[in-house]
Structure formats: C-alpha cells, structure tokens
Amino acid sequence: MIDLYQMKTIFLLLPATLLSAVLASCATNESKQPIDGATLFEDNCQRCHRYADDLREPKDFLKRAVHDGGRDMPSFQNVLTLEEEDALATYLSTL
Ligand code: HEC
Image 1 (cartoon, rainbow, N blue to C red):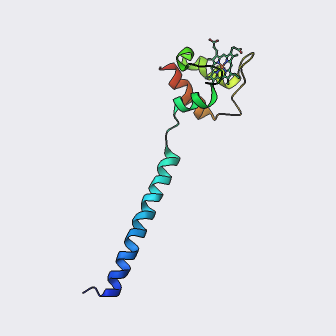
Image 2 (cartoon, rainbow, N blue to C red):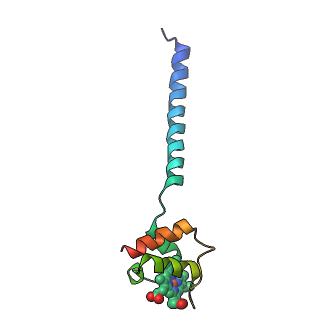
Image 3 (cartoon, rainbow, N blue to C red):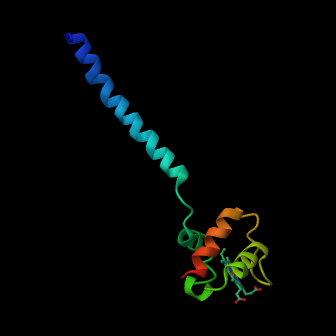
C-alpha cells in the first residue's frame, strides 16, 4: 500500500519531472532546428536584394557570390557559417 507521504511525493515530483522533460526536449529541438534559407535571406540579403526570386541562380554561383561578395556587395564569409551559406544557396536556387 502507498501511504499518504508516498502519494504526496509522487504527486509533487511527477509534474516537476514531466516539466523538466518537456523543457529539455524543447531545448534540444531548438538546437537541432534545421537552418532556414528563407530566414537567412530575410536577415542578410533582403535589405539590398528585395526579392529572393531575383536571386534564383545556380547553387554554386550563389555560394561563391555570398562567400566572396562582389564589387558593391559585402562578403559573408565572416557572417555566415559554410553550412548557412549552403542552406541559403539551396533555398535560393530552388525557388
Ligand atoms: C549591402 C548590400 C548587399 C547585401 C546585404 C547583399 N547583396 Fe548581393 N549584391 C549587392 C550588389 C550591389 C550586387 C551587384 C554586384 C556587385 O556588387 O558586384 C550584388 C550581387 C549579388 C549576386 C550576383 C547577381 C548577379 O546576377 O550577378 C548575388 C547572387 C547576390 N548578390 C546574392 C546575395 C545574397 C544571397 C545575399 C545575402 C547573403 C546578398 N546578396 C546580400 C548588394 C548586396
């Protein structure tokens, strides 16, 4: 038989355990969230290139343009990771 003390312990601990499990899974999901090309475009490119559609180019070309920059375009090699450059180029080239 479970006595009152054990009941209390279970009812107090259970929600706390569940809550921390939920929080932990949220945290992990966030760090594993795939890099979103659309968000990268909005955060880094939109202020100069208004429409993502205008940048629909072959992926390799996009990667080079973003990494190296251009005459009047800044290089993003110190701003984006290679993984982000790749995700962005994939997004734009497949619009
Ligand atoms: C500060 C403004 C600015 C930002 C921010 C910017 N660009 Fe540019 N981009 C330009 C300019 C200006 C050109 C014209 C070519 C040049 O400067 O050499 C250009 C050219 C390009 C080209 C070559 C287009 C062509 O057909 O030759 C691509 C591709 C490109 N940008 C992609 C991007 C992407 C992707 C981002 C976001 C990571 C971005 N740009 C951010 C200003 C910018």
